[in-house]
Length: 399
Image (cartoon, rainbow, N blue to C red):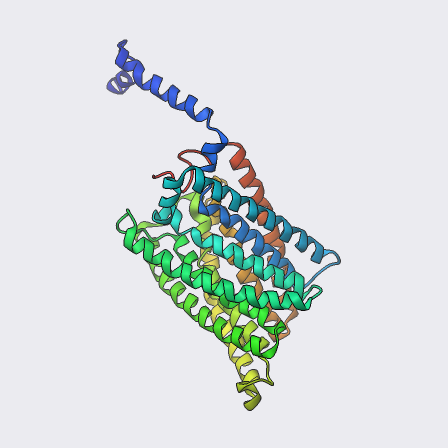
């Protein structure tokens, strides 16, 4: 004890004052960090916020029990999400211009690079929201229907290219070896997988020829995303077995795998329902559509419990650290994967004509909205109190 106390006492020499002086100087430097320096730390993970806010707009549109005005609430959230997305894009461009070398490393450093998928997922939920609020439950202008077809194919091309190069660049150029497996690894595959989910939303409102092309391509994309997600899930569980649960502030990332099965259910059931039965193959085989609808439903039920298990595991992992979980951008993972779980539950309820299941979906929607409010307030507070978007606090802190 005496030795320990001696270590804490200044010796009176100038060397004993040096650490304190350097610490104070570092503190003073941080206290004067300007907007230019803060923009440097707006990482790709920020797009988790628009990905999840866009997911909430989809949940509000697809919830089974609606009240007057819910459509307009969803529309307000949609436009709010567009504004936030544009603001983040402007900040990202500013980051690239002002700190190019630092920005370039964001594509090769695993801690940030995997979050690039959230940028593309934000685009996918914006396209899905345009479909739901502009066509499915909206005015459905002919020009908008055609625009949705074009947007689908553009997104399909970009998302597949992105998922290919995201994995390739990290494998070839990552400065960290071995490349750590993080829950955000799912996002690169999800960006392509959500093409299948988009197809299920869009195809039913397109002319038969377009619809068939969208359904077939969407099924292929969903298969690709699902298989990539299965591989990622195996590594995810292996990583947990070897290293244990992640730190408290990263625990919300445990929800990310939930989306793999959930969005696959949405895609399969939605695509089967969107099949144009009097066109091409389905005109020659009239029973094919009803058979595929039945198969899709039971495949969905088959996958639902798998999604629930992942969801329940994540809930337990997060509940035990409630109150000890400082805000991080990973908090937004509370929402987006669970939007897929909620919509898949609603779709199964609709197919089975089960009012009980539909009420479960409505309760899930309300919980998602409440959690979004908590995450949004936490995010604003974290920025204001300099816990994020600050030197040494974000996904780029190791470089």
